[in-house]
Image 1 (cartoon, rainbow, N blue to C red):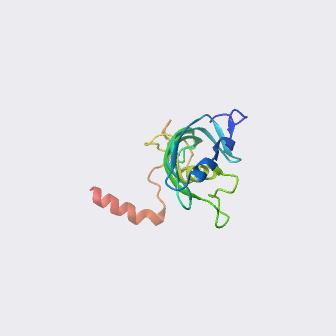
Image 2 (spheres, rainbow, N blue to C red):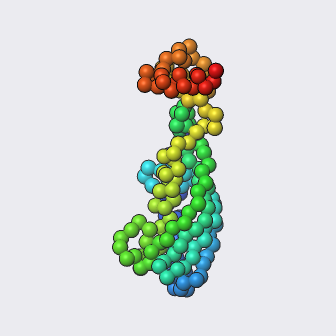
Image 3 (cartoon, one colour):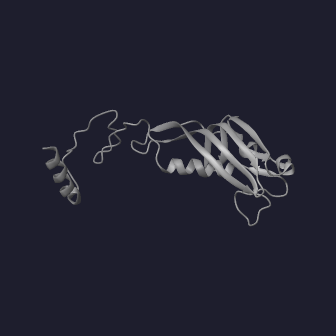
Length: 177
């Protein structure tokens, strides 16, 4: 994993002044390209980079943000627990309300500032919760001894099975024979 000792930019670069777009009125749009280096998105999330293009469209309700972003996330494999750096790509489509009818995370106040950080953080955490793998065929850890099965084979008995799963194993064995 990369060091988190301060070699990153703050999330202030994701606070966009869209006052010009609000003043232009509905039907106008603006494209923004992102190619940001390592960024501290929040206290609990640092990304290796953010790349992509977003289209900001003025609607009568506010600003519609649409596009696709790629981010680099340092994490650990959910099967073998090894450090892994993965690029994840996701589509964004969110309406930032203006004026805010009620306090939401995705709104634009009178200062005309649209903050993308909470949206990118939410999307990244959703994808991260699904699990990130070091490689598609990761074998994981041995349930008995904890050895990483990608690097070695262990001498644990592979036939030890949870008694609750025994009927399923019998069914699988009967289908294979």
